[in-house]
Structures are given as structure tokens and as C-alpha cells.
Image 1 (cartoon, rainbow, N blue to C red):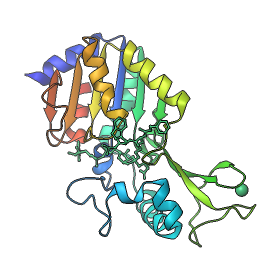
Image 2 (cartoon, rainbow, N blue to C red; image 1 turned 60 degrees about the vertical axis):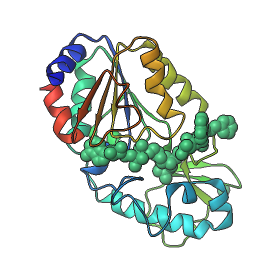
Image 3 (cartoon, rainbow, N blue to C red; image 1 turned 45 degrees about the horizontal axis):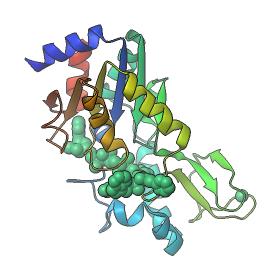
Image 4 (cartoon, helix red, strand yellow; image 1 turned 90 degrees about the vertical axis):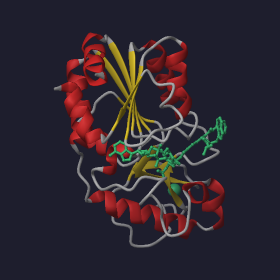
Length: 237
Ligand code: BJW
Ligand code: ZN
């Protein structure tokens, strides 16, 4: 049974790398990007999460982010997020790489965390470039900085580079780990999607946990199909 095999791999690993995507937050009521319930009006993320979309219509893009911020403000971490906190406490070394911008991993208590696509809870000014924590209920869209410059969410859009330091640390974690967990991501968006391939090419076991098969599933050392909030607690039990 793979669950037993994966438990044994985790228990003996000195260093663990974990990559998470929107699926780990689905059980907290946070909509995913792709698949059922993952849509917003008639737009695809590829049409809204771009600098071009923001330049064209900052208000429309902010309406999407404002809608997500309001939904996520009411969400709490689930058993999947908490299982990763327990695993981090137990493992000698664990790096959690997340594509999620919802802030639920830090809220659950994950410490060694790399939020490679940024955070919904920070804004960046296009004029003075100040990045700041911003959890305010937005009253005017698009929001503006004290300098009157246009604010954007401090997230990574399509066509934008990931923060260099975070990407470097992620790659280092993947290259140095004894096992990699890939949880709740469609494995479609680069460069995160190629991290598991890098681990596999080094002979490192990759364990995928997802509700449905993805392009990674056939190559993964173990594919555990189901909800992250069910499987992760059982893996660490
Ligand atoms: C469950 C579950 C449950 C449900 N339990 N599971 C080839 C090489 C390199 C780049 C490219 C390339 N081809 C194309 C590119 C460009 C592009 C890209 O990858 N495009 C693809 C669509 C093809 N990549 C980029 O542009 C990146 N930048 C870049 O490459 O820069 C290069 C550069 C260098 C130098 C100068 C300039 C540029 C940036 C990508 C940024 C992605 N941004 C977004 C938005 C972030 C902000 C926001 O949230 O608004 O990130 S898009 C969106 O997708 C978001 C997510 O983090 C990301 C990934 O989505 P994720 O997490 O996988 O979610 P879903 O919905 O797709 O999947 C959910 C999964 O969960 C499903 O599988 C379900 O089955 C599962 N699930 N419930 C377990 N309970
Ligand atoms: Zn400013």
C-alpha cells in the first residue's frame, strides 16, 4: 500500500521539499484556478493574472483580487495545512514552497516557507515601488498609494519573473531533498511545474497528492489520489 511506503520514506528523510498549489486550500473554501468552481465570471487566470490585463483595466483586475481577498479573509487553514506544520516540526529539515498567495500556510504556522507567487495581503506601488502589508477592506478600486500612485497586488503574474532569491532557495531545496511532496497543483504553471521533474531526474522520490491525475502523476514515484486534507493527516499519523 503506497500510504505505508510514503510514511516510511518521510520518516527516514533528512530533508523534505514540499510544493503546494491551490488544491491544498480548496477544503478551506478557497476557489482553485482551473477546474470546476475555479472560474471567475467568464475569465481565465491567463486573462486576468497578467501585467497586460492590469494595464488595460486595473479596476477589473482589482475587482477579481478584491473578490478573492474578501473570500479568503473568512477562510481558515484546514487539516492539510496543519499536517504540514506537524511534519515541519518533526523533520530535521523541511522547506515548504507554495504557489498560493492566500496566506493560509503562514496562518497555520509553517515557518520555513517560500511564497514564490507573492501574497494577496501585500500591495506594491507602481510609482514609488513601496511594498507593504495591506489587509484593508478596499473602499476604492483600484486602490492608490499615499503618493497617489496606482497600487497592484504584490503577486507574480504570467510573463513576470519569480522573485529571484525565493526561486533560488526553492531550487536549492528541491536539489538537496531526500523526498519531494507535490500537493494540490495542476502542475501546469512554470517554473513551479518543472521542480518535480528536477527531483525525479536526480533519483529523488516524488510523492504527488491530488484529487485528480495531472501531467505529473504518471511520472511521480507515488501518486496518492484524494483530498489533501484527508491524506496528509494520515501520512503523518
Ligand atoms: C486538490 C483538492 C484537494 C483540488 N486536495 N488536490 C515554459 C517555461 C517557462 C515558462 C513558461 C513556459 N510556458 C509558458 C510559460 C509562462 C508561464 C506559464 O507557465 N504558463 C502556463 C499556463 C503554460 N509562466 C510564467 O509566466 C511565470 N513566469 C515566468 O516564467 O517568468 C519567466 C521570466 C523570466 C525573466 C523575465 C521575465 C519572465 C509566472 C507564473 C505566475 C503564475 N501566477 C498565478 C497568479 C498568481 C497570483 C494570483 O493568485 O492571483 O499563480 S496563475 C495561477 O496558477 C496562480 C497559481 O499559483 C498557479 C498555479 O495554479 P495551481 O496552484 O496549480 O492551481 P490549479 O487551479 O491549476 O490546480 C489545482 C489543483 O488542485 C488541481 O490539480 C486539482 O485537481 C487539485 N485539487 N482540490 C488535493 N482538496
Ligand atoms: Zn507610492
